[in-house]
Structure formats: structure tokens, C-alpha cells
Length: 131
Length: 390
Image (cartoon, one colour):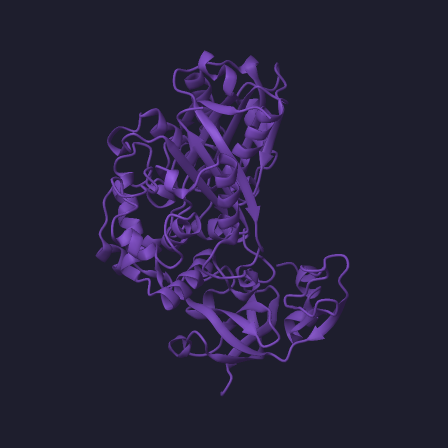
């Protein structure tokens, strides 16, 4: 991914910053600038998520995505944050320990690289909440 | 609006067509469909072509113009040509655009084609191009792959409904069995449940034999107003419904991970338009990009309850001779999945079946057929219903 494209969302990627519509009360991560319920009548403000949630579903990726080859096999999950929205992220640690319904919390980690000499991407992954 | 009929169809061979280019295959399909319809280039009012990623697969955009040109429709006839893109649902959308053009009266004889040439790049590059159908910034950047997204659907389906890996494998086994009966299919070999389960894991619980392949291929249809269709063919097949629906681009934003709401909504709109229900459909081509996708599809289209798709498949209800034959062509799994062509190929299969020309895979007495074409992990769904009688 190009540097500007990644850089535009640094706050969201590093600090789990999303948005919140004060009109209907729904939280959004990844951030949305237009509320899906209120649309142009919504009132959107920035919101930093607590970073705790639960695994809705997961997989262990064995044939890696481009740029993630060194990490395979890795656990990828859909995590429902306690404030409501869900996101896709990796779960750090041994894939055998991951299960549906598991409580997790966010951590700052390296995500991947753009080849040998390209940019290193950092962002949010998750660990078991009791770890 | 006018009723619309299909008067000509053609598929190329599907597979790894190393010696043939994108323009070669799409012209073969287009000219084949035109010949089948008994029309000529000067009769054609418009051309729509479904193509997901010419830019990534063959470094070529402006596919509509290219296809019109190499079909002989440009320099003398100047036929308008439009490329349609909705990831793996590009073909289904191209058909829908063509139907709306004829129904509205903007055109009479209209061609809907679909094509993808995927083997000019390596499999890593092809996978990366396909992954662009998901949310690049918020799924791809986390390390998601397409098999990974469908694996997460499968994992939850298994957890919640008790669906088994064996039941997933049965989808692949059945589709290979059908593919053996289809001369254009990429894979014409039978496989066993054990072979599927012993193939390498791509993303748990999906094995490589749970996944549709990378394929080159093209398909085309010729449409005409229903009132004149008999002037061209003795066996016109009529469009009873065309419907489309959208959902969130990312899987994580869906109401329910195991339901493709876009499929449910497109099907509902199609059933309403055709004034019929799932019990009226004699056969269906569904979007089995992964085995779990077929299990979700038979649920979401209303052929069985949510959660029962695995058992429904295991009990043979989706086989030829079962309650609702699914993917008689071999589906995406065995016939192959040239992404932009798939939605058109599904319609070609239904037309072939409703004409009674499907040979050994013929569903006897088929009156009504359906196609179900999905883009991405379910952000776009297109459903069509076809009929032998007007």
C-alpha cells in the first residue's frame, strides 16, 4: 500500500481511533464520516476505542496475503469491540489457543512490509485479554 | 417496460488457455453467441462486457472498446460498448445492464458478455488482484485473503449450526461430478471427500479443494425483445426477473457473518418480480467461489433453512435428481471461475438447460432456472430468474 494511503489513517491504525454518531449513538471502526443510520443528518465525532472485545469468528491463514508471507501461519479474526463495531485483525500467539467467544485486547504491532526495502507497516493486533 | 428474451448463447472452453489472449476468447464467445442467435453485427445496438480486473490481469483497461473493436463492431458500425465491474459479480451485472437496455427500449438486439484472462500473471499476483474485491484498507491490510474471509464464514457456520468439513467437501465432490458432464469445464475429473479433506489447508477450515480455481474463459449471450424472439430462434428463453442488492464491503460490518444479506435481498426482489418462490425453481447456478459459499447460497436463496445447507447438501438434495439441482455446469469449483465471465456463464448454463440441450447433465422437464452471482465476500449480489415459457 502506498505511503500516503497508509499515513492518512495512522491515528486509526495505531490508536484504534474511530468515530461515534451522537445523533443515534452508534460507534464506527473503521471510522466512517457518514453515519449509516442518520446519513447526512448524523453528528460524527472522533472516538478512541478502549481496545477490548470478543472474537466473533477466526481462521488460520496458511497461504499468506502478499507482504505477510513471513508471518504464516497466522490467526485472523473478526473482533467485536465492546462499544459495538467489529473489525478484522490478527490475533497474536499460538493459533491453537484462539477460539470463538474469546476475550481479547488490542496491542500495537508490526503488520507487514512492502518487500525487502519498502515501508514497514504498524497497526493494531489483539492478544488474549488475560495475557 | 418490455419483456426480454435470450436468443443466443456461447461459452468458450474454460481452463488455462495459455495460447489465447483476452481478446481472442471474448471474440470467440461473442461471435458464437451471435451465430447461435442468427443475427449480424449490423443488428447489434449495444454491447456490455463484465470484466473484473483487466488492468491487473493483462494490464489492459478500456475493455469495452477493445472487445467491440476486435469483434468488428467499431470501425464501421460504432456500436456502443460498456465494461461493467463489480468484482466476481461483473458478469451478472453486465447481463442486468443488457436486460435493462432492451426492456427500456434503448436497444433491441444487445449482447452481454463476460471475460477474464487470469493466467497471464502468476498465482500470487492473481490472488492479490482478487483480494482487491474486499476492503483493501481494513481487511487486506490486516492480512486477509479471500479464502481467509470465506474461512471465517465457514468457521462460524460450523460453530453455530454444526456444519462439518465433510459437508463442505460434498459440495466440491458434487460439483466435480457435474463438471465431468460439461464439455467446457476446467476440471472433468471426479474427486472424493477424502481427497478434499487431505488436500492442503489454505485457511482453516478451507482446503485447496474447497476453493474455486484460477481460470481463463469468456461467455456471451444475445438478448432481444420477447415479442420478436421467435423470429430468431425456436427456443427463446425469457427473463422473468433481474435483481441486484448491495451490502457492506467488509465482512466484519455485516449484520450476520453467516448470511449474505445481499443474496437474501436480491433473491427476494427477484421472487417478487417473477411472482414466484423458491419452490417454483427447477435448477440454480449459485456462486460457489468456496464450498461454504454454496452452502450459504442454498440457505440465502430460500431452498433450505438457515443452518441446514450442510445437511441439505449431504443428503443429495442439490445433486442432479435431487430436490433442487445446484450448479449443473460444475459451478465455479469445477467448471472454473474466470471472474468477469462467471455471471454470464451461469446464464448460458440455465439457457442450455431450459432449451433441453444439456446432454448428460440435463435436468428433465426444467421450466424455471435461477442464477446467483456474488461480488467479493457478499457486497454485491445479482439474481436472475429465467423461464422456458414467456
